[in-house]
Image 1 (tube, helix red, strand yellow):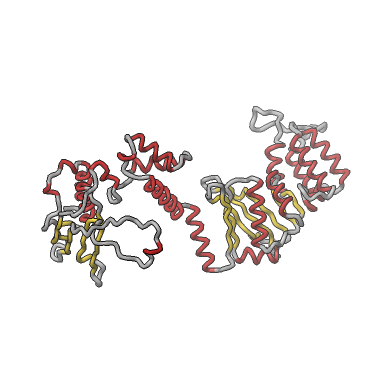
Image 2 (cartoon, rainbow, N blue to C red):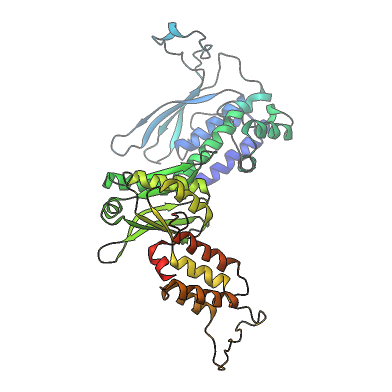
Length: 436
């Protein structure tokens, strides 16, 4: 009999076990393809006759580990062993074993390669479980795929295990008719989370981090957890990052627009330049969100990893939450705005709107009937070409008249004014000030 066919037979037997005759009771001479099939049969027989079951022993061959013989018994077999600590137990559990001799023994048939029942005893010496509650025996309790789906759905919706179990009990007419207990419910969720931790992205990353630490103890990582004890932000540095920061960490740029994963989590990196103007990385982070709390935790963790050494200058984009966190953490650093991000924002905010219906707006012309440069070209020139403040101010006023919306242009102008006053927060740093 094939294994899958036997499995179907067992499931059919479970559904209609009350209709089966005693011919399906264990008998000497019965054959099974494996000890697992025999165990399934014994479990279902125990459910039919309302008694708990367990495995007594199994003998294996030393050569290949294949089971030579095994015995399945009633859970009431034998007696509980005495423990030297029994006198310390205030409320000992009741004795449940009665030296019941009910069992089924199997031996490997070397010619056929299957297992044959060689011993059967079916007479109990104790009271059996009531048929109405036999499904609550430990060996009979199980959670079907549909029930598992309902448990996971309730958990995802924020419904606690106790409330979800009570709801499932009501749906089947009471807890006595439910095939699993509240503890089974909790165990199912615990096992599910353990599987997700073992095979999910976070679990794989943590396993990778442990391997890197084993290779080089200088590797470091830190986790920020949310209120539900789930991983929110992950920061890491390796030995090379630590060494590079020690030599080239005077100027740091932090950028979260490098890329995202398929869950749209921002991936941020701390970067700088070495003596050959090659990019070096000082740290990396996978973030859950871009809030002030996340940035503050990240910057503090970054400094701890690098023994508290603060950079002389740190560049970021114009994010408000990031700027606030920089002000609180990098107390000894000059905060500058990255010119790349400024130019990217200029593309968004300073596009000409002379002809909003057209993808290619007409060029402006001056009095000599020559095409005027785009406002983006003007802005780039003002960023990098003007050093004299009076010339810059005159050119800026001219550019301001070209902008259809002046809000962003005025805000970036205020950044330049802040830098002139020497205020660290929001300053665009020395080289950008000179460009302005």
